[in-house]
Length: 206
Image 1 (spheres, rainbow, N blue to C red):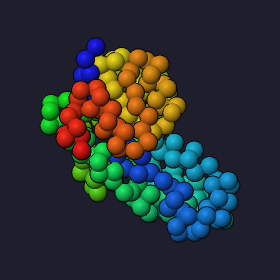
Image 2: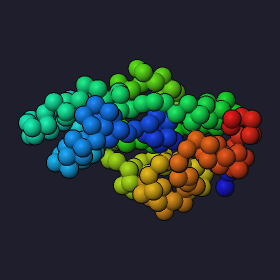
Image 3: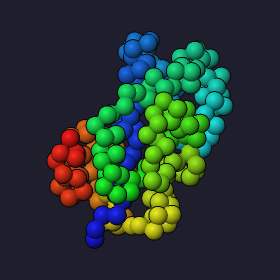
């Protein structure tokens, strides 16, 4: 089947998402490791990605761990510093695909408020042909439901879709539905894959 749409994850595909790196830079690796061992910060973030209110969720976690309150508040107050920098080559690939008339969808674990905040810094987040944002959908990858919801809304399924994500579990879930998949480990590999699929020329993918 011909590819009808290209699906991009966002975190670590279009924008770097490295909370540990951020906290290493501000509180040091030793203290960061202690905090992440004591507090399930990624679990907190999953709640936000499932649609829980960003501020309320982070503040409730901070209140539950008073010894880490100031550091947990950084997850809220300095969030944009964790969601940085942009992976420019990936953004160029998105634009090159759309310039050729290929629809580009997002499929991302992202909160409602955090996505709106990020879009004020990264305008390309408002330029997808279709948005599939977990916070609005109430479910996160790799739950099969989120892939089904994209299929139902777009009318596309199986190998009519090609999907890039940096997490193997998310890729496995998409592949189980027959989607073409690419485990993202850098923009050049994704560019090469898009060229191999005949979606872009080498010059367009540069």
